[in-house]
Amino acid sequence: MTGRLAFVESPVQLLNVLEWAHAQVTGAPGTPVAPGPSGAAPHGLAAVPGPRTPSRTAAGRPGPERSGGPGRTAAGGLTVVVLSPTDPMSRGQLRRMAQLARDEGFTVRWQEARGGRGSLPRTLRDLAPLLRAAERIIVGDPFSRYVQLLLTLFGPKRLTVVDDGTATMEFAAQLARGERLVRWHRRGGLGPRELVLAPVSALARRRLAPGRRRTVEIFTSLPVDPPEGTTVTPHTFAWTRARFGPPRLTRGADLVGTSLVETGVVDPDRYVRAVADLARAHGATRYFAHRRESTDKLHRIAVETGLEIVRPDLPLELIARRGPIGRTVVSFPSTVVHTLPLALADTGVKVAVCEIAPEWLRENVSARAQGFLSGVAGTAAHEVDRLTACAGPSVERLEFG
Image (cartoon, rainbow, N blue to C red; front, top):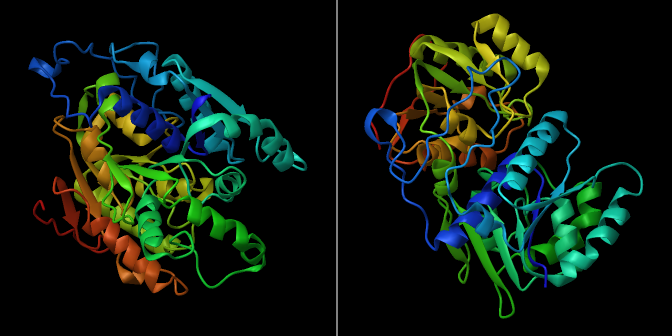
């Protein structure tokens, strides 16, 4: 048996596989790591120096320093397969995360799964022996057509789904309701491609659900309502806290970008105005871009707001934990309003979420998408400040909780 086999397609998925492996070794979700006097690391954890101030192209990358954690033990018997995307920013972050995983002792296999004609059958042929021998399969994106196809060909007896952003919430809800798996921002009915792949998706949905011959675990930092029989393991970013930081805090605020414009949900003009309002209200100087944000939109934000655009080369949770990071981090509804309070526990950083006003949405956005965005903001941890719609002359600040 090869033991455990993980399939990842994004940097965040790979980070969460490392977190899951760490939780397997520690035996329970980690507790926040409190810094010692003067920001020093607690006894038994070596403080890892943060990188230099982020530039416009990178926000630091992990060095060879170690915290003394059980990385090598966690890595035993786990092979991570990177189903490489085509997006250059995603590929760059994934390569850095893959090296970090190798430094921790994991076996990482880079698979050019989307490398042109013939890549699909070649990938299936290359991975078939590993799939047949795997005792457990870990996936990061249950909505991925690639992952769904792999699950239909090789149904695992033990399956773990790790977080892939807020999509985990929608996955758990759809699975519990017995619905077909559709990403929350998709509109309309089945197109030609979806009709062709419908049998694959239907079988994959059944294999992603717990049953008499299959156990299913969801490893998540998000509030989920999964089907009966599913094991939910809390994801507390214990590995990230043990491995990095605590960070140096800057006096100002940082903004976190989102790809809601790129996915066709939010009007670009409204979005840029909201970013400008947030920057003025909170004294922000930096804008951490989502890896899928377009260059044209980021250039416009830089010109119209004066914000420094930072293109992180690792998931934001790692960048923030290493620092430097603002004492306040403001985000639109996204995964970070759930994950950053965990990764930055006991650092003194405040996280705030700005709700999406209905008038920012494009005309063809579904009511389902609107409800999902409201749910992401509404279910944020009690440590997160909630801000009303941000566009306008002022920003109303709400109390914690």
